[in-house]
Image (cartoon, rainbow, N blue to C red; front, side):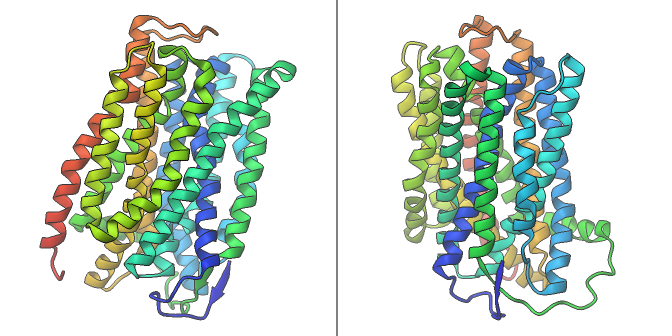
Amino acid sequence: MASQEVNDPAHSVSTASRVGFGLGDFGFVMLWQGCALFLLYFYTEILGLPPLLAGAIYMAGMIWDAVSDPFVATWTERRARKVGRYGGLIGAAALPLAFAYPLLFSQPFTGLMPAALWALVTHIAFRTAYTFASMPYNTMPARLTREPGIRNSLAALRVMGAALGALTAALATPALIEALQLPLGEGPAYLVAAIVLGGLAGASLWACTGMMSEPRHPPAQGEGADSYRAKLALAFRRALSDPRFARLMIFMALATLSFGFYTQSVLYLVNYHFQRPDLVPLALGLPALVMIPFAPVWAALAHHLSKTTTLIVGLAVAALGYAGLALMPQSAAAPALGFMVLAAIGNACLPVMFWSILPDAIDAHGDRTGSRIEARMFGLATFVQKSSAGLAGLIIGLSLNLAGHQASGSDTASEPVRLTIVLVSTVLPALCLVALIAVVRGYNRVRNEAPGQ
């Protein structure tokens, strides 16, 4: 990652840096969405793991990822303070990440316990590589600029890159599986698709590293004395004492639960509720495609409204989309796609506003306390995000297990299983978003009452 000898974080961000930043989330979300859409389904339908065990493995990997985030963030921050910049940490982790992703969809062992153990080990390996790559990336908006308008633009570019990555995962994976499953078998087809996506994601992260130009800060002195545990404890205490940051963590938890419930179960919804496997590529890809043009729309709207008001509008739109999808009968697959699009329009607002508001909150915290702990606060945010994503997977697996779901190789499911799939993929996401509206409204009051503001 190139550096600029610029000490003022309010400097203008170059076009190459902006494009490179968006390209980074193209790679990250391609792999994140690939896991969210296909991994739980792969565990239950291809590996044949019981749903509860599959959900527990998914959650274990996410909890490991979440717990490691603050530690890796602390290490990243200490390195940056030693050398004055974050350097090529993203690029250094790109190759391990590209190799780790296909391992998730491999099946070298037969038998329940060997397959489950392999799934757990590969999931932890992938999440570790993901953490080392994503921690320095997540911190970049706070490093690149303090100008709110530029942060809105960076957040919009990030979401557009993320949507393109999600679209690639959603369309390329089923297309490759469809083309390869007859000559290779369904399991090996998943593996080949993962190899292709892993390589593409690794290349995008290398490009991101080369294009972003980071302001160079003078190396800090005496930063290496404190232990990681002491630095993390300090970060937790300071973050939890900040009511705005704490409320943003509640926002992250509920938003991730909502999105996780939907993305991790939509494949079940299309296959078992609507019984239209032919619509899988469209159902998976259309929402991501819709998010690409709407991310800058939400960013532009935030220039005219407050960020929190824009968030409330987006939350209401997404909740309406999920509510409408919940009411669709099995024979209404085509109208259901329209409600999926409506939910995607609203969901496009959430990451744009969150990743724009979070650096503002970190800046305000630093100005008020006189200490910047940017990487650790981003690490805490991703800790909450990944813990919530793992919890969503566990809840889905537990729900399917209680409903009696078993992989059958057909597109039919019992009535309890079908109703459970509708519940976790539509009703639970909508309820999370309705609760989020109250959280965001409360953020306005906390912001106005915060000391020193």
